[in-house]
Amino acid sequence: MSEMTATDMETSGTARLTPLSEYEGSLSSRVYMSLKDAILTLAYEPGEVLRKVEVCDQLGISRSPVSEAVARLAAEGLLRVMPQSGTYVAQLSMDEVREGAFIREAFELAAVEYVAEIITDDQITLLRRNLKVQQGLVEDQNIQGFYKSDTALHNLIMGFTRFKRLASIAETSWLHVNRARQLVLPNPRRVSDTLDEHTAIVDALAARDPRAARSATEFHLSQLIRHLEAVERDRPELFSRS
Amino acid sequence: MSEMTATDMETSGTARLTPLSEYEGSLSSRVYMSLKDAILTLAYEPGEVLRKVEVCDQLGISRSPVSEAVARLAAEGLLRVMPQSGTYVAQLSMDEVREGAFIREAFELAAVEYVAEIITDDQITLLRRNLKVQQGLVEDQNIQGFYKSDTALHNLIMGFTRFKRLASIAETSWLHVNRARQLVLPNPRRVSDTLDEHTAIVDALAARDPRAARSATEFHLSQLIRHLEAVERDRPELFSRS
DNA sequence: ATCAGTATACTAACATGTTACCTTTCGCTC
DNA sequence: GAGCGAAAGGTAACATGTTAGTATACTGAT
Image (cartoon, rainbow over the protein chains, first blue to last red):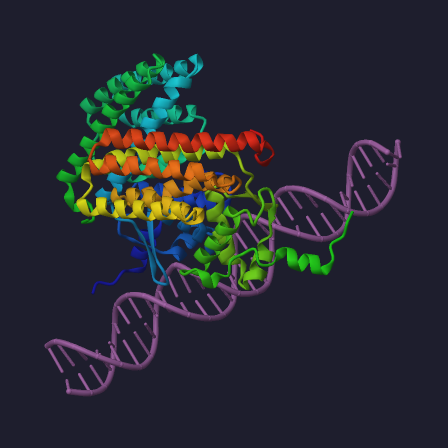
């Protein structure tokens, strides 16, 4: 078998983790965020082994905070821990993606229906402002920015429920969908369609019409899922067989 | 101030945790389950400090598995960790209860609607069998058993979605609701009404009618929430002010 | 008595040492 | 050469030692 040179070993393990100084909070939560970013951007490849000691060395810390971070990521399904054996980066799984989408849909439909009944004028203004930003980003073809603004819109609506845990669970469920989404080229047509769908949702909320808000959201998410299933068809090799 | 005798200190800390031998799995997950049971049954009182070392001593283990269990419980909102200071059992909070109910409702409605479309004859048989058991328990006035069977029915339906995470998130969200429910006396009338509501849900699923299943579930959960709000009215002192 | 400052005791967070289990490999047998 | 079993290496899990931050109790001055 081919042997690794010392140089290979050094380079292969470096610079994949964002330095902890970029984040704030306790050591273990910073490790968590750094690892999570690396996994979601596919800097750690699906299926790859995760060596705790390597992470410790690279970050210059001990095993305790790394273990805690790993435990959290395993609970979210981004890592798979084999007891007494090893830790692996989770494979992409269309099952996980579908489940994430299902949960997200359940939350978002319930949230939007509820929010339509309690939304304030100020909150409607916030939504319209977000849409304006999105419009600008579409015109500038700034797709990266558009995704961010997209996420912000959904979080805004979730936040209006004033439920604290809701948004965080939705985000966790959505992780697997987003990781898969890294693999598809952004499509300008889809982006502008998305803006239209967002506008429809906001209009329904502004009209304080729960049923319209629900069906607009339903349509929006169905388009998204249709899109993701296309990814599975195009790149089946990236997913673990179910 | 009144001083505690040595005897007081000993007895106050004992026998509140179920021995780890009752559970299986890794040490830390057994600690997690033992602590969780104690919190949910209110053996650990809301607001009380949780002394890790006390837990370690009582279970005869070291701090590592306890710390991991505490972290998980804190993530679920059953414990509150004050960094470098102390860990406290979470107060009952009607906000948490409402959020838990909201999430549960979102999940259950989505699940039941989905399951109505894919349910098999075997699965319908399982549901009917569960109903039969419930009927027997109602007749025997076995309310404890009825609650268990109730939970089993909901889990059964969740399981039919074949989504793995769904049931576990729903259960976690439901924890706060259940903890509050410990405080209300079981009402025989409500129990038999519940059975009727369950029957309506199962009938709708058996008829493979998503909309009927949805509205039957909606009604069932609305009754439950109405009931919980009555608890808040009757025993407001048990909840942390929002 | 009240308040400021300080010392102390306690805790979670972090570091490090140890154990037990799993996996793979290597040598032995047939 | 194929199949099996022992042994070694590597890992997560667990135990224990250390650090640093927080809250409380104490001291002394006003």
